Image (cartoon, rainbow, N blue to C red; front, side, top):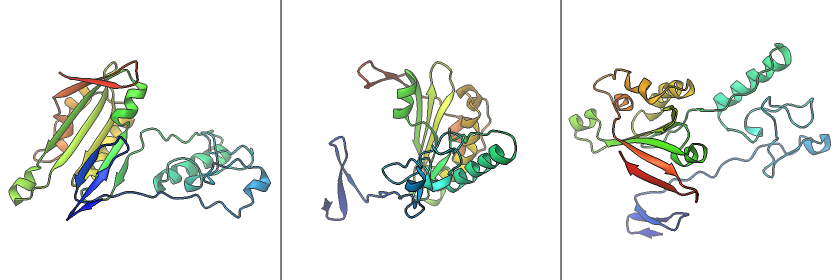
Length: 230
């Protein structure tokens, strides 16, 4: 619903927010029709995607599938990695599953979005207690130029192991910054490892290693989340 120059967006939880614009993605359908997969007995999803195991093998042992025709992540680097894993499995004598955990992703919007690992919601499904670190600030270069642009950063930490299980950013250069942070999340580094890293000043990226204020979020037995500042 549009109200003059702004838009009222109704969310799935019933909330309504007044915003400047709404961006949404329609998704893609795997282009598998006409390949004779049904005749070969290959199991397909409702959207036509080929169902494969960790080694990219379908239910027919001689048929493998990688990339956008599968039910996994539809990203070019992921397809390349899956293809390399299949080649190593079939021709390299080294069975290699496609490791799709903690794949960094980005939305090249304005402002851009970068993310790696679990969201707070998904992390609560896996871990009973989280420490969430978040900051919303105006980068120094924006203050010097007079721009009103702001940046949002968030770290999601498993409280028991102190491992950083998610990192998220909205703001200028988010995809570039998250690519580097993705290495740390993939390596299973802890919040202490982040804290021990010296930041590059003045950059927005240094906020990822200087976050100190945390919010403890606990998974309740009802499935809801309870939070308390620390």
